[in-house]
Length: 299
Image (tube, rainbow, N blue to C red; front, top):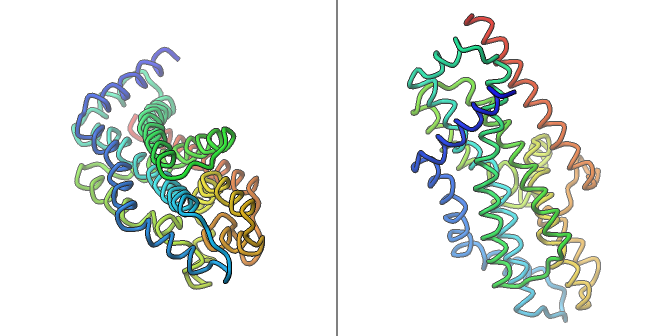
């Protein structure tokens, strides 16, 4: 246990000591926030206004609150995974510079080594993502605040759960990488493609039925929906308080992925949590087993 703690501490220190890795991870959510506010805020508000029933009006503050909640949920659902890949570069760096050979011949078991990488990456990713969450909440407070204390707690829980998923996924993928070029290529691919696959950049309602059903097999989709639900719950509740029809509010939930359907079957929030939780357990177990098998082959 002592060796495990020392190795975790070593990995965390190296991450924060490497200014390139740290600032790249930290600046990603901030850049996304600026881009989203600049290019997508008006798209979200216009989409809501176009769907508004004839004869009903909505306040500007509520419009801004809706756009802000939508933007924040998109940023956090993507950042938790992309930041995990940036934070997990150390594992590949150890392979690239030969450090992994020294680790392999040390008394530390392969299972302990893999767990140390995972835990250290999780600590680094959570540090960045929770900081990003605080920044996003400040933005929501400046635009239109409708969240309760429970919403914030659940949103933080979603971020932690998605970080667990992102670190597990990046650990599996990075296991097969051994050069800086490979991790840069994979990081670029994940950064550009993950947001579309999880429904963060574009609501799933905009996709064809076949593509939407295929995306529903991806665990990240459920993580995005969880963040959406807890970021937007207060805004949707306020819409009902202001007299907007329940049918309209329900359609907003459907069109902006607060409600998911798996082949026309509604997915409840507990099921979403179960999907992400089981996926994390399976990925972590597979990652540890892969390292144990590799360690036996080397030795």
